[in-house]
Each structure stands twice: as C-alpha cells, then as structure tokens.
Image (tube, rainbow, N blue to C red; front, side):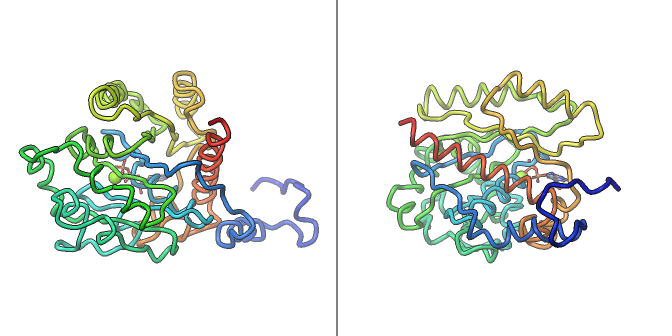
Length: 304
Ligand SMILES: Nc1ncnc2c1ncn2[C@@H]1O[C@H](COP(=O)(O)OP(=O)(O)O)[C@@H](O)[C@H]1O
Ligand SMILES: [Mg+2]
C-alpha cells in the first residue's frame, strides 16, 4: 500500500483508508453542500455507440444518478430492449408495463410511463420491456417513423416531469431506435472504451450523426465524449486516451472512468454504483463526470 499522502485534510482524524473512503462517500450521499448548477436549457442527450459493451448504459444511469443526487431532475429513457438501464435503476420492466415501446406506438404518454427510481426522488426512468425487441421492425411501416420519440418528448410533457437532463440509452445498433433517439435529442454523448479497436466503427457512428443532422435534426451535435473502463496498468489505455483527445479535443471530458469491479457489480443489486458503493473510485469518477457536464451546461448559458 502507498504511504499516506498529507493532503492537509486528515490531521484531526489521522489518515486511514477507511476514513478517506467515508469522507468520499459522505460527499456522494450528503450532497447538500455540493449542489450542481442547473443547465441553461433542458439538455436532451442521446448516449450512443453502435458497439455493445462500451459503457453506454453504465454511463447513462450513473451520470443521471450523479446529477439527481445533486439536485438536478433527471430522466433516463431506456431505449434498449435488453432493459439494462431499467434494471440498474430498479424500475419495473416486466412485459406489459407502460414503457418506451407503448410511447413509440403512441399508446401512452411520457408522463404515464415514467417511474421514480428509489435511488433519488429526482431520478426518473422510462423503462424498456422485452416488447421493444420487435419495435425496430414494426417502426419501419409507421408514419413519421424517425420522430416518434421526439413527438412524445413534447415541451408540455417535459415541463410536467420538470426535468433538467434527459439521457436516452441506445441499443448497440444504428437502426430506427437509435435514429429516434438522435432525432429527439440536442446532443450526442459517446462513451468510448479505452481498449484496442475502440475507435473502430466510430467513423460510421459520426457519419450517421451527420446524416441525421443534415436531414432530420439540424440542432444535433456531438457535445460530449467520455472515456470509460480505463485501466491504468496498460500502455494501451493511455494511447487510446491520447488519440481520442487529439482527435476530438474539448468535447472529451477531462474525467476518465476507471475499470472497476464495483461499477460492474452494482446493476446486479438493482443499483447505480453511486448507491452501491458511494466511496468507490467508480462512483467518484462518475460524480466528477456529472459535475463536469453540469458545469459545462451552465457555462453555455453565460456565453449566450
Ligand atoms: N468502468 C467500468 N468498470 C468495470 N466494468 C464496467 C465499467 N463500465 C461498464 N462495465 C461493465 O461492462 C459491461 C458493458 O457495459 P454497458 O454499460 O452495459 O455497455 P453498453 O450499454 O454499451 O452495452 C457491463 O457488464 C458493465 O457492468
Ligand atoms: Mg446498454
């Protein structure tokens, strides 16, 4: 174990790893003193990457939890038939539960499908049920098939839910569900795994974003890239990080999410890592990323 570093904050209690972890946990769990600034306008963010397993769902639910725990009303829309975001937020998503599927069909409203997560009264989730698995094909023959989610995210519905942030968790494809998410959003958040092949397929994703931007949603932009599953022991992780930063510049958040067992264990308990182990490095890094996003969102108000 490394010798304790004197940060000047541990003199009274004496430094112990447990004391430090408790202090970190307190920052997550008692956030009264650390409220995050509200964004200049309601931010609708699509979390997309057609690769599976890069951290889309983990990022959507943990950023949402970080913002919600610090006073910002946040909605997660689970748009993946696997329903992993619904699982992590522990909201009912058995077949037949009012979900994003019925929203796309126009059968229920956003407000009627939204459930409050037990992790915070500020954290809402529209679940995905297995019924969504057929939607990609069913949508093909429907009128305005690309903008059905956008229509459901009406100003009135969002005002009724009173949310500051909306994260749409996409499936690992560039099909009609992801197109619906891109049409409904203002911003795209791309999680990139710090692994070999991380950048493969990114060109295709960016092309699709361009196409949506040209033809369906002129306001869409890639506003945020988050590096996930960083393993400090490998040179490769640093190389990927550097390459992504060189290529995308300021869009890449300074915070990098480390690979951490706690992050991967949390959904098994129906929790975000912020609830499961608030003092862990994974929780702290998602909280840091949430803060960075919130500060950028508030700063854009000053520039306007
Ligand atoms: N920082 C991390 N450290 C360890 N495991 C992670 C981390 N982020 C995600 N995982 C795990 O990796 C897997 C894929 O993540 P997930 O968010 O489901 O990706 P996606 O939604 O892009 O398919 C999941 O099992 C998840 O628990
Ligand atoms: Mg996912």
